[in-house]
Image (cartoon, rainbow, N blue to C red; front, side, top):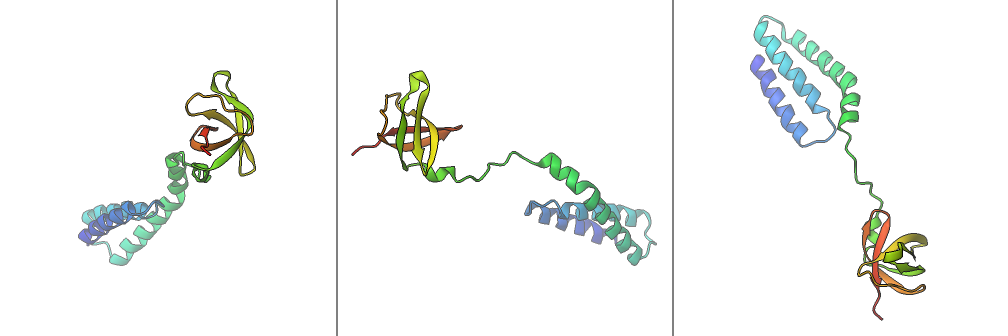
Length: 145
């Protein structure tokens, strides 16, 4: 019976590789432990093995999953759809002068700090194209007529 547990552990590890919820890994660990237990105690009844497996998997899942999720939490790129404004037209609301670290544009009803992509001065009320976003600043260039 121990080979069934080891096989189940391998199968669950493969399943975990294709998911991101950290669920199958606890069952895989429990299967591995049960494979070892079944090797040491071959006379242990199958129903006891299944019961121990389920209890161990449940305890591992409930006790450690929140802790592991907390430590594995990566800084996710917040999906803010900022990329949707790339290539769009904005209007300069404050003269853009990179040397003076000043300038702002308005796009989609929001005012952003802006800098010109080529270090040129861009006057107020000029239409510009958003080329990139660096931090909280839009990098823009004059829109050709």
